[in-house]
Image 1 (spheres, helix red, strand yellow):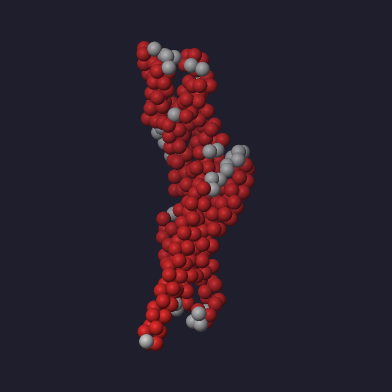
Image 2 (cartoon, rainbow, N blue to C red):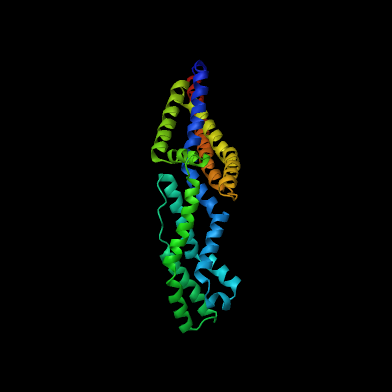
Length: 293
């Protein structure tokens, strides 16, 4: 440890930078997934799903004859109906990430599949005869293009509200685009590698370097898993209440998963250092025993 104690300040600064750069990389890889999953559990998506159902079945015989609640539940639980909403959410996030004006997403194909699923269910449970099912499917599918346009119009209004100039959200989005970019991730990865090599050089012992880097990875992973997730949850809720007039709850599982990777890496590095140290001790004892004999 003598060599390692020659640079305590440098090791401290290097360690802090390594923890921070690891956190930045983990967050950059995770934040888009977190936002996407959080929005999909939000009232905005529920309202979009309700609007899609109303537009599809409003003023139809089906809405009255099939049982309003059952029909609505079946439609909103349908995989293709959910895919349609998810496609718009993902498209909106992509637009935000790339910093461009809202680009519409054609969901009519998914809506056509959802209609086929629902009509098939109604035919199987006896609500519709074969002829009625055929007419209903034809009528509903004639609406899908219009519904796709309407839902995109709704998403565009939300998007333009978020990206309005001179608002805190707009400024945050400009930082977000940099934060999730490939260039930023490459810089962070290279910085992590350089800091690891610098740590090894400063300690001048591979075992000591593994202990330090391992501990720093555990710290970075723990902060992302438990501290950052709670902090971001509070910030996003405040911003969403102010600008979206609804609460967006952050999904913490992706943060915890990303942080766990760093924690596991840290544990493996420390275990490797311990194994190397024990092996060195065993080799030294073996040599001493050989000389004694």
